[in-house]
Length: 365
Image (cartoon, rainbow, N blue to C red; front, side, top):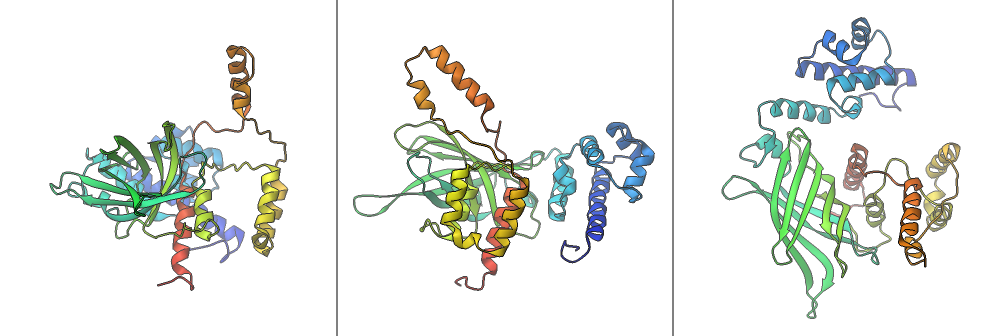
C-alpha cells in the first residue's frame, strides 16, 4: 500500500483519490444505487459523477460531502483507507436489511460478536473531584448459559482496602447488545448490592478473523463520593494490561490524557503549556517534538483564557436572577462543545499505542 514516505505527493494523492472512489463504488453497489440516482440525490450532474468515478477528474470537498449525503454515509466511511472498517460498514448494512438489526447473543449473530468475547482490562478516571487517579478492573463478555444473550461481568478495583488490608471491589453484571445500524455496542451493568446501574457505549466493527484489542467507550454512571450525581466520562477497555501504578509511567500519562473529554481542537492555557514544556523538557528536546512545535507555532491562535470559578458568582450578594443571567452569558461564550464524541481518530490513536507496546523490544514477556 502506498504511504506518504514511499512515494511522491502527487503519487500518494492519486492513490488516495482512487481509494476514495473505490469505496464509493463499493457502497453504491451494495446499496444498488445507480449513477443517475446518485446524480439526482447529490445535485451533481451525471456526466460529472461518471468522470469522478472513472478517475477522469479530481473531486472537491463539496462534491465528496454531497456524495456522502446522497449515499447516507459519514465522510469518514469513504475517506478511510482502513478496508476492515469499510467492509464492516458494508456488512452491517447488508445484515441490517435482513431485519437482524439488534444482535442479542453470539448464538444468534456469531459474526457480529466474533472477537468481542473474553476478558478485557478496564480503565477510567476517578469521578471524585478531589482525586486524579485512574481506576481499573476487568470486564468480561461471554455467551449466556441459555444461549439467548451475551452476559457482561465487571469487577472494579476501587483502590481502597478493608481494615484487614484486602482490596475492595465492586461487582456488576449485565448484558452486551450490538446494534448494526448504529455500529454500536451497548452494555448495561448493574450492582444489586449497591443499587447502581451503569451504561457503556462503544463503536462496533466486524472483526472477522481478528480479536478486539481495545476500544474507547462512553460511560454514564453515578459519581463516587458523598455527593452522588449523574456523571458522563470516558473509559478504555483493552486486552493489554497497562501500568497505572506510577503516575509518571508512560502508560499512565498516555491514558490520563486520552480519558479527558478532548475534541479535535485542543485548548490549553499559556501557563499550562509552559508548565508542560518545563515538566517534560526531555521530551520537548527531541528533534521530532521541535518539528511539531514549529508547526504548532505557525497555526496557533494565541489568545488569553480566563478561568472563572462559578461558585464566586453564585455566592455573590446579588439577586438570583442577575447571577443566573451572568452565568448563562459566560457559558454561551465559553470554550465548550455542545457534545463530546469518541471519534474514529481516538480509537485509532489508542489502538496504535497498544500495538506499539507489543512491538517494544524491552517489553517483558
